[in-house]
Image (cartoon, rainbow, N blue to C red; front, side):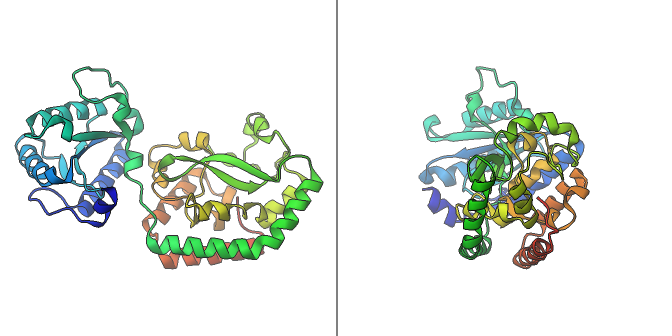
Length: 346
C-alpha cells in the first residue's frame, strides 16, 4: 500500500495543498520557528484507500469552517492528509486532532493519526486522558522533514563507492596490516553517529587511536580546537603513529564506502556528528539532519577546524539548498585535490 502511494499522486481536492506546496509550507514554517524560537505541530491523518477521497473532502470542509487563517491543510508525500498548526504545541495538536476526528463521518477505527512536533521539546506534557493519542504517537518533525536521496545521487553513490572500494583495496590491506603491527586493538573502529532524520547508525573507520580513546575524550574536552559541541584536536595525544599518517592522507575514512553502499551515507553531504554532539546543536543547526550525511562536504575543503562551528553549520545548510549533480561533482573533485595535497579536514 505504501509503495502504491509513493508512485501515485493524490487527487486534487479544493482548498487542500498538493504535496509539493504543502511540504514547502512546512519547510517555511520550520525556518520561521528557527528564527523566532516559537513552535509548530503537524497532524497526519491516514485511512484506507477506499475512504481517502471522502476524508480529504471532509477535512477540507471542516478546516475551512473551524481552523485559523494561519493553519494549512494539504497532502504529504506519503499520501496522508496533513494539518499544519503554527504556534501550537503537541498538546494543542492532540486536542485539535481529537476534535476533528469526532467531526468526521468515518469509523473511528478506520482512521489513524500521528502528531509531529517541532522543535522536539514541544512534545512535552502529553498527559490528558481526553486526548485519543498516546505519548508514543508524538514524533519529532525532524523525521517528517527528511529529504530522500534523489535517484541521480544514489546512482552516483553506488558507482562511486564501489569504484572507490575496488581501487582502494590494496591500500586498505596495507593499512590493516600496519594498524595491527603498530598497536594492540581492532583494525576497524565503529562509532554511533546521527544520520538521516537523526537516526543513529554505526560509522566505520580504520582505527587511528589507542584502545580506550573514547573514555579519554571527556578529560581532553577542554583542549578542543573546534568551538561549539564538536570535538576536534589537531595533535590528539590518543592518535597512534600509524593513525597520524592515516588521518593525514584520509585513508582512515576509506571504510565509509561501506556506509555509502548500505545507504547510511552519501559521497557528498554534511559530515555526521556523534549523537551526543548532534543533540547539543541548536534547532536551526539540526536542519542538516534532513539529508543523508556524507563523506565530504563544503566544510572539508574550506579549512576545517579553522572555521567556527556556526559557520560550519551554515555551510551544511547552504549545501542542502544547492544540492545538485554538478555541485556534488565539484565537491568530489575539490576533496580529491585536498586529499592529494593533505588539505582535507576530518
